[in-house]
Length: 238
Image 1 (cartoon, rainbow, N blue to C red):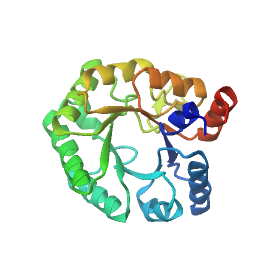
Image 2: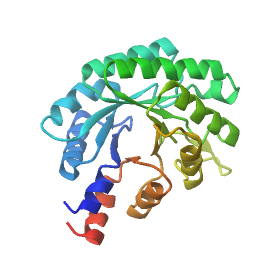
Image 3: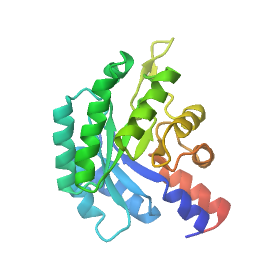
Image 4: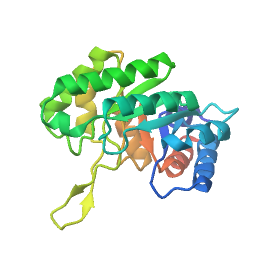
């Protein structure tokens, strides 16, 4: 694989998270991840064991979402869910914070939550990506505070969104923005040097992927993996 294409492929956490996806869909999407040699797949908790088996012998890691997508589980439940995912074979954990607690400025709760999930993940040699859900947590000072907390407790990544943070629009429909370049730059600026940045939500084209990379992201969640990497191979060569 062309080195430029490989670099882009190893940015991608291939997301297999939609509620309607079946086991057959999981098998198909794991094959996509293997074919394109992505960094990881990101799967629902029940699918971790199956994904590990499907990806055996490849370089694609298995990640699991925790408290997904709304972040409403108690801290104890998130810790239990994390430990189970790690025991099932997940080596990357993408946790959603308690959004309401962040919006009300209960930073002690948020710190304890992120610390607890980070500690159990690191106990099992898994890394942690902390999802802010920037479609809901919109104030700059709140995003900065979350970056500072993640740095303090030793989280491995700050992450923009779940891809399911739907907000009611003026016409009554629901949609989300997901990762923005401004948010990624803000998160990179206010996170410590050992904390990386992940974009998620709305990264659908090769141009999107290149732009989030330039903004400081080293990982990006994606469902449009085939389209992005086929375009990369066309541009940079196979």
